[in-house]
Length: 336
Image 1 (cartoon, one colour):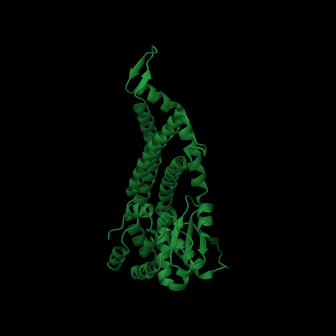
Image 2: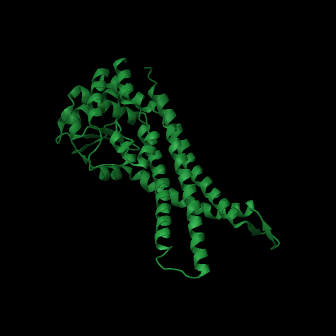
Image 3: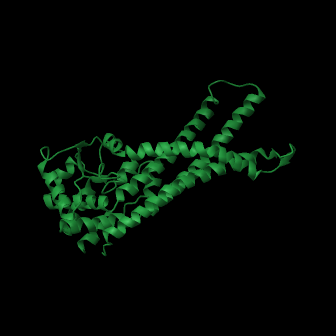
């Protein structure tokens, strides 16, 4: 397998990060405009500049309302993104139960990471360990202050030093290639739109069950008001679902070659492709984290657990997974 130079890959990932930063908000804003357009289409009429009733949709009015909404949408998403983006390290640590370690806590894993970082001339990342018998590892972080390599106790117990070095080399290559920054950008935006979609669906469900507030309305005005609310929520749900689908499509921008290249970089760094292939074979028998069942976290694993694809949403997410076949990865490493 031909390994693309690290500087080339860094430039690619930096470019993709910028495109994602522009692409996700664009998708969201387009759906807001579509939502306003559909609402006005259902109304079927509007007042023109002279106060007369006209039938159809006024694009000027839709655009005017969109511009009024724009600062709130951009401001809200911007604040949400900033909080999630810059606090990702603590959020991941809290979600996985990871704990930072020093050389004194575990000299074996610390020395392996240190030796490999010295070999490739990169700064020493934080090392986190998760007390879990399953086998997995992942890299995270957006800059040198937050770059982290996380491994499970199961991984350290089952792999020998050469295999563990191959896995660590794989994760360090993700950091060197800026893969972690790109992936976290994607995770944050997908999470924002996924949360909005779920919130609208929950409000819609409660409206159906409780009649929009728990009180029975006997008047026609009350019924019409309730029906209008349901229609607006349905339109909002459809628009949010479409936006969510398009954000999943953008995951294809995070090419599956990312994992192949991290495998190649890890094999090159540790000097033993067969050791990494052996490690992947062992991990594939029992990947995952016992207490973590989150798709956003799974996107970072060295091997994504197949057992996570149980619900419909998780199966849809799996279709857009950035992880290639483990068997194919092992095959390529054995031919390295």
